[in-house]
Amino acid sequence: MKYLIILSFLISSTGFAQSYNELITKHREEYKADFIKDNNSPLRKSDIKHLNFYNADSNYRVVAEVMLLENQKIFKMPTYAGTTADYIRYANLKFLLNGKPVQLTVYKNIALSANPAYKEYLFLPFTDQTNNKETYGGGRYIDLKSSAIANGKIEFDFNKAYNPYCAYSDGYRCPIPPEENDLAISILAGEKLFTGEKKHK
Image (cartoon, rainbow, N blue to C red; front, side):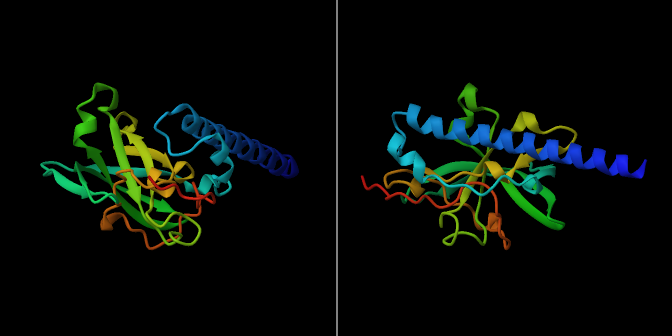
């Protein structure tokens, strides 16, 4: 009986790993396809082979406690183009990552939220210890939605962390992740350094 329980666990664990890998693989194929379909994209079909990612790791899919922030003032988040964009601090996210407590702040873009199609869009930029080594030096982004918050929690996945357009080309207004989202750990998940030649506009 004990052997059957262990065998059942191993089979179910393997099945989960395979299905999770397939989920992340599908997400990344769609991510790549979006570059090709977008006329304003910094990448073309020939550039896609230079996109690189960490292997899918379900340990980087986390459930965070959400503390909504009230009465926040609009602030100007600087971009790598030298401009700014108006944001508010929307919520603090607290979670465990590989057994360690982590906190990040998620933001809402004022102009974008005025568009009904993006009113639920939340922006999670961050930097970590892999920057300028294995990942883009300017940090990475994760997209979230306010509608995904349920019972004071939200699930998100660092495996879906992606590079800003500035990683591939000049001429884009990519927000600089605020210092409060500078993690003192390595996030070994999501998109890695682009190995193609950076374009200059």
